[in-house]
Image 1 (cartoon, one colour):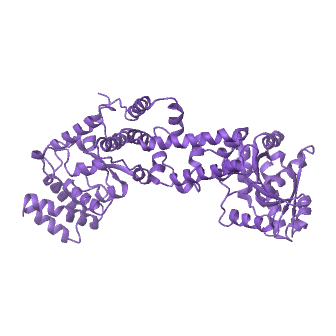
Image 2 (cartoon, one colour):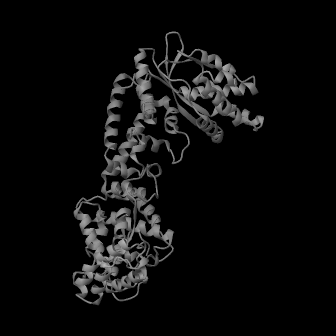
Amino acid sequence: MLNCNVILDNKFVADIKGDFLVPSYQRGYRWERVQVETLLNDIFENGANPYCLQPIVVRRRSDGRLELIDGQQRLTTIYIVYRYIQSVFSQVKTDFTIDYETRKETAKFFDRMDDESLASTNIDFFFINKAHNTVVEWFKGKDVFVVSDFVKYLKQYVRVIWYELPEGDKNDSIGLFTRLNIGRIPLTNAELVKALFLCRNEQVNYDKQMEIALQWDKMERDLHDDNLWYFLTRRDPEDYPTRIELVFDFMAGKKDGERDGYFTFSWFSKRRDRLLSLWNDITTYFYRLKEWYSNDDIYHQVGYLVAVGHCIIPQLKLETEKMRKSQMKEYLTQMIRKSVDCSEDYLDLQYTKPNQKRLMSNILLLFNVVSLMRNGFGSRFPFKEWNTKIWSLEHIHAQQSEGLNTIEKWHEWLNDHFEPVLEIKGETELTDDMRKAIENDHLTGEQFNQLNVRVVNALSEDGDTDYVHTLSNMALLNCGDNTVLSNSLFDVKRNKIIEMDKQGRYIPYCTRMVFMKYYTKSDDVSYHFWGIKDREAYIKEIFDTLKLYLKD
């Protein structure tokens, strides 16, 4: 539980005031050129846009000074920048000072930062001198308006999060410093949002704080269910030390690539004047997402749209806010139709064309999702599997030997296909030639290619090969498994997929059905080939299953 006497605030950098003391348990200033330049570039490139730096964590001492628990490197760099700007614009004032509990002479060195001889006498001086030189070089050559703009940004756009502990035991400060600095565990957006509700304020009494804390923990536990998490997002939960922060990102409308690391906290902080209703908004938002998750149809529709990147939860939540469930399902249906919309005939889509390849992947994912929706046994598509692995289109029946360029790979391919050829053709000249090639340590590429064509012909149905890169010859498979199977013909792939399934590897539902010949009429089934009747039955099943979503 957070200390309820914590003061949490947003401050513009220009509004930082006070006499800061860097305590003895901290090392001195250690930022190098790249860190200083990064700070300067971030502030300047962000320009007239809101931008928030990492928190400044302090504890007010009995003498009125502010013990600087976290943020020393950033605050010192800002101080160095201000001291340089003062040399250009004398009217710019710095309303804070920095002193050092055990290195008091460092405070005086800020007046002589360009003194190279003095800088060589002390490691703290050395780094401060280098940072000062970096600041001078960064501004060098830029006109005076750049300096003026930089000052404006510090006044109007660049903020820090002010996290002030109450006056208390020094050990509390050391403990917090250790947590924040050993392993560099920063204060997260979620922790800061939590502090809004649980630290000292007049809107939320103690009982309400306890209620909020319990509800918070319940939502956090729920989000540790990976099935719920990957229904909502494809983001890696490792990027979220506190998973509830994902919900806060949704509410704040945080976009991928947002430069402001504390964008989400800032959004909530601006609404701190209505904490009780804000907390109600949070719980309402979360339980709406849980409601979607518990409804099988909505779960599959929303999960699919998130998985293919066709929509994100904040957009969906906003646009369906006032819809009934029936209206929402129709809305989702329209969204899904857009995700598989095509100006071509679906039968003419080609694996070799990148845009069409992506569309084929969407169609087959949707085929898997809707097939599980329709089976009536309560099975759910595992978006966790889809969103944590890399998936690709697998040729159900391969016609090429791409990537087979070593004797070891040639031997392996021939070994894999020997039994199927023997089973279909019996002992023939082809099986004799395959045995000789397998035993030949000097097999050439030309010899293998000639034999490869004969084996493909033996294990393929007679007829054209135009279908090879079309939807009727595609299924979804994990990239790692795809690599193992990519050059195998149907019979070999089928046996390998059965083995993978026995080992507990996840095989998409419809991919499994394809290789089990589930869609082909029983009197037409031959497990050695992927023939025209198989392809026709497969395509018919796809179109029948997806008739709600695919255009005529």
